[in-house]
Amino acid sequence: MRLSDFHYDLPEELIAQTPAQRRDSSRLMRLDRANGAISHHHFFDLPSLLHGNELLVYNDTRVFPARMWATKESGGRVELLVLRFLAHDLVEAMTRCSKPLRPGTTISAQKNATPLEIVEVPRPGRAIVRFPAPGAKHWIHLEGVTPLPPYIKRRPDEDRPDDQERYQTIFAKEEGSVAAPTAGLHFTPDVLARLEAKGIQRVPVTLHVGPGTFEPIRSDLVDQHKMEVEHYLIPDETIQAIQTAKSQGRPVIAVGTTTTRCLEGAARKPGGLAPGPGFSDIFLYPGCSFEVIDGLITNFHLPESTLMMLVSALAGRESILKAYGCAVANRYRFYSYGDCMLIR
Image: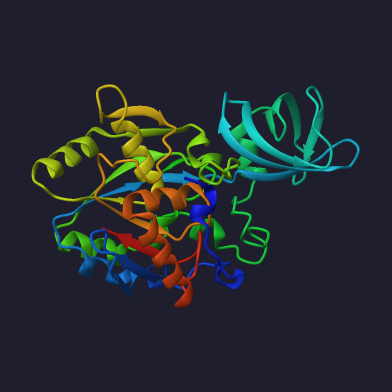
């Protein structure tokens, strides 16, 4: 299976640069896994598209202001995307600058001239960075901005200060992600109330979205790609709800690919799906089976991406390519701030 098998042509003007006026006013395409049938709706129609016996599992991770800029002593500009906290004063970050950073050097964050020490450069484009007292989280919240994806062609917080709110789901609780679990961006209190009134249960997981979600595949052979590790936490109540739903023959619907990676990765651990912390580096592509989820709510993804392959594994590559072609023809909005699909 080759990378080009997951290519489709997307006009640049269909890449959403701003969120929908109302979260639940985004469009929703329903794709039937059994026969590939497609129908067109809006997200506020979701309760009417479900039967009432489903279990929804969502990701309650919260995006932190992970992107910041700094300057070298020479005046050169450095862009940092903080990926994870290693200690109270240490982080791992992706870096972008004209010349490689060197261990032992100091750069100054641009907002408050906060001195940052480059402790280690484990590989090109990555650095271990030390923050001064009182610690990394304090300074990141002062220096950082919302880490919007690179295909949104504007500086975050520059012309749309509501990015801080709209690039978070209404479920957002546990801080630790560098990208939003975007399928959850469409939910509103009204939609949740109508789902609950219909008897649809929902439970959380926490998976902190890391760089693996947007890391490009660099091998032409799909099965040679390796995903980066992402850390998760599955509560007892979620495991119990999934087990009950399975025993009753009720479908489990994942809200987003991040929830899918959490559940399917955990299910493949020794002992199977269990509560508690863990990590997942699962890569799902056509030919892989799904042990937990029966359906998926998800946005439209980049061509040749791991996320495109995940939805193709669930619904079939030909069905997904047909659905994406239909979305382009019907002028759906794509990617993080775009429209979404219900696959079941």
